[in-house]
Length: 479
Ligand SMILES: *Cc1c(COP(=O)(O)O)cnc(C)c1O
Image 1 (cartoon, rainbow, N blue to C red):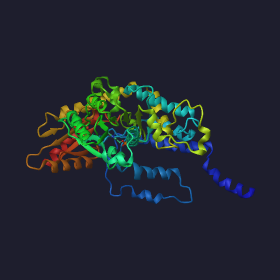
Image 2 (cartoon, rainbow, N blue to C red):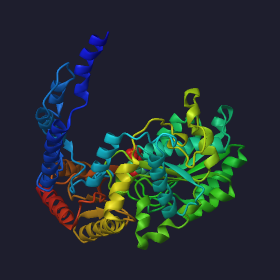
Image 3 (cartoon, rainbow, N blue to C red):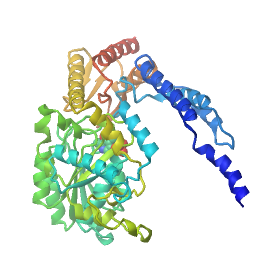
């Protein structure tokens, strides 16, 4: 028996390399990361390839070990050199990513120390750190000390936590679902509809409230719809407002919606996954008026705090209902009962064991301080306005609504061709060039090209390059 164990140990100890091996790997990865970062700006933002990384299949799992150099080489060719590069300042499609370097260091520490950040008993310091970050976000949004929240994997799970909590708070039982009503606009992010389905509310009525010229939810239409539904004996219970729609960055009128929600006793959720952290820019204060009146707010540090993908946040005022839905105590967890000075993340989320996400958020915020974050957000705002103002006087171009945040829409109206078809070709040409990545959308049947300035590496140089590329491509396509 001992012999068998010793033999197994000899092999299993390979999982715990000694420092010389760790140093060697660290050096190789560091070199890889430095090369990647140093080459940003000269590498393309979008690479369309025939292969599309399929050769990664050659590295399926086998019994034997593979050299790190081989793995890194394949990471480069099959992962980093295909598709969109979300670390590039040229990425202005969708709501782009970024990836602050200190977050990588935070992830490294979190992976090495592997703190169990789901439960206070297991990792009191880690849970305190995450809750401190939640309280910081609550302060920014004007939420009270009694509010709670969670660092989620992204905005989608944050929206889900809000919706299931609202369902509980309004005591929506299975028999009530087909009479219950949810209000949102057609510009709401699809993760809201998805969360509604996952929450078992697919049979609820979804009222898509008409939009104003700025593609914002119309407040009068909202109240009218609620009153109508009440008359019909339905159960209006949830309003979703977008604070920064993904399509156009439009901000629904927060304060008036808050008033309607209060008057008619509805849960007021603000999906601020894209726009929320723009609250750090003082000149935008008026647009955020009333945000503190929401019942719940979704934020996405992996968008507008520039983190690498994998970190969203939910803030909720009604602590009791959050816990009612998410708190669970299994028999085998009885040791965790006791003097819990902090709410455990597992009590606020569908997750139990989870990545210690706080580290990747706290490290950059502390290492840089808030100042450069505020400057970067304000810079993105001004870059978007600059783009808008530069396109405006050019002949043949049409622009979407004046940007409220850092998303603008444009299209080119050709003389002799159908505009939608032309703009589809235009975006294809921009993608083929690959230096800048943009995405498109359709609003009321009209095909628009979007410019979303969110990456911390996007500066004036990238916007000027974008303006140059657009005009070049329009010229080429017009001949
Ligand atoms: C990105 C986004 C979401 C979804 O967040 P994920 O982090 O992608 O899960 C939800 N709402 C809005 C407005 C968004 O921009």
